[in-house]
Amino acid sequence: QVQVVESGGGLVQPGGSLRLSCAANGIIFRLFAMTWYRQAPGKQRELVAAITSGGNTNYADSVKGRFTISRDNAKNTVYLQMNSLKPDDTAVYYCNAHFGGLDYWGQGTQVTVSS
View 1 (cartoon, rainbow, N blue to C red):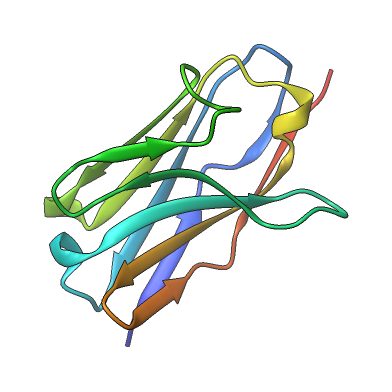
View 2 (cartoon, rainbow, N blue to C red):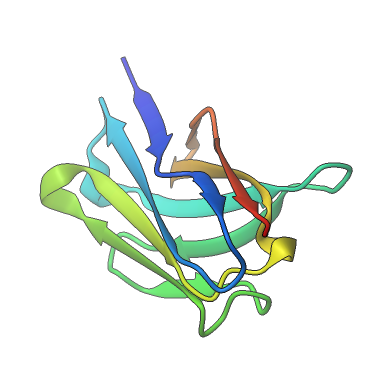
């Protein structure tokens, strides 16, 4: 059974940092591209950051220079280090695992940036 579980969300002040984790079990993790998406209230889900099986990364323009995605294949885990957080970063953050025709999603973790 495939499980994708995000953790690490919470309430943080503007300018602060959080690190999200996403553990994906039941798959051959090293083969999967891993992507973080987010969805703010009343807005469409958007791509935040992605990392391929080979370690290549891609970021939304709005987070470049502030967020870093990384993966640890030994732990079946992908991370999203978020620095210099802004109120506009407030959203539910979702983790996606993708390989070929396979797509798995987590349940999401809430990130709230507010003073």
